[in-house]
Structure formats: C-alpha cells, structure tokens
Image 1 (cartoon, one colour):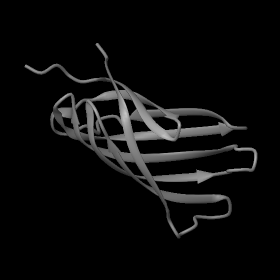
Image 2 (cartoon, helix red, strand yellow):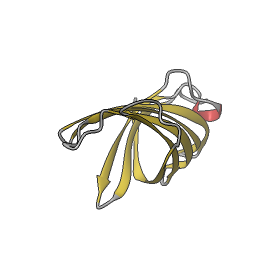
Image 3 (tube, helix red, strand yellow):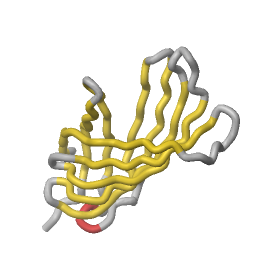
Length: 131
C-alpha cells in the first residue's frame, strides 16, 4: 500500500559556466526538504529549447539523503519536464533500485507545486514492510 507525504522544500539552482551547446544549459541543484521527508538533495539539471513563449524541456537527477517518516537512507529522483507555452508537464520518479539504508526498495513519484514563490512537494511512495 502506498504512503503519502507533503511539505515544503528550498531549492538553489546554480547555473554552470560550461555551456553544453547552442540552446542547452546546465545547472546544479541544492535542495533542503522539510517535514516527513527531511534531508538534503544534490543534483544536476540539463535544460533546452527555452523560448520567449515559455516553452522548453529539462531532465534532472537528484540524490536525496535523509529520513522519510524517520527511516534513514538515500534514493535518486529522476525528473522529466516539458513546458508548452507556460503549461508544465512534469514527471518525477524514484529511480529503480536506488534506495539505500532503511529506504532500500523504495518506489514512488513526486509532484511539485510553486505557490507565491515557495516550493512544495507531494510524494507518494511504497517501501517494503519491515519486521
């Protein structure tokens, strides 16, 4: 059975000087999650096709390290985002078999909402039963 947590997070996106090519750029991610998902994440984002009409795409990978409902460990989140004329279509999934420690075996998906410049996560996940 899936479990569910929500809460705020802080994010710093740091542009990298090394342009990967015309129309592509790379950023480092530095996040702090709060609430039942509590910890830090470091990652990399590659963006492309960003236009004046707010269309484009990105992919990102981030490694979360911390606790989820008090269970410690880490896991990888994979992002795929498409923006068409300002309308987002975002998929964030836990990378298969990426969980470590007490988060080994985790699966799940996350959504992100931005309200008044503040970021919030909504994370639905499944963990193996513990004895």
